[in-house]
Image (cartoon, rainbow, N blue to C red; front, side, top):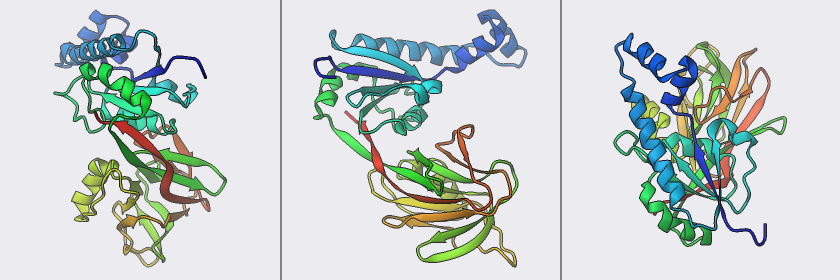
Length: 297
């Protein structure tokens, strides 16, 4: 809104310590619960303290006339992100992936509260860097990575966005049955499901699948391309294994469900936030129009 100072939205998630206190009621009861299992409350209390310290430093470093808000991961889908907002994600790398699909061009600064615990692939910044970076992020002069995202378009008009990967398969341990169409080839398949990953996701779940299958497809985070990887395809008289994986640039990957029930599509590892994908439904997976604008210092 014209005339208003910039707004910084601090994105956070509930810590393991907070979940324990919510479950057991008090600090002492949570400690007793863990000690009966040979664990120490300190192991979850220390990361929580580091997070609080980082968040305090971040909020204290803001220009005094700027506005600020805080939103937790559970409320991302209900929060109204304004086009001019600056997003500061304080936590693990997955927090950036969780919030990316709710944004449309807003700059994101990922702050790592515990560098000795978290890899910092997406949360690259220390809390002490934030004060100097906010003005340049607001003006658009900060150094940024434009990370490619994935879009799933279903036949009923539904859409799903992801930063790391989108999974298609069965919600249980049953085999997923579907028809796959990729690069002018079509195949009926029965497998443990498949994922479509971006260059960002190529360092996570996609990497483990490629290591297990011996497939190695180079993909950078900013490359306007995706990879698809089929998990454990099963050969039979009616299903094949030729389309195990490949790179997608301009073309989309098309999947038609042959699952009577239990078929699902979900993004970035959030299994509870799924779209049903039962018999006859069709989805296309392609490079999204949106990208993550990640400030890297």
